[in-house]
Image (tube, rainbow, N blue to C red):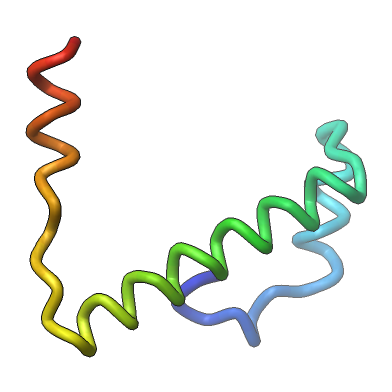
Length: 61
C-alpha cells in the first residue's frame, strides 16, 4: 500500500475481511501505514537523522 496505493483493490480489502479483520481494524492499518509514510517523507525532506531507536531497542531486549 505504501509504495503503490493505487494498486490496492477491493479484493485486497476483502481478503482482510476473510481473515477476520473488522472495518475499524482495516481503517486503522491504512491510517498507520499512511502516517508512517508521511512522517518518513517529511523527515527525509528535512534531512532529519534517525534517532537511534533501533539501537536503543536492541540494548533493552
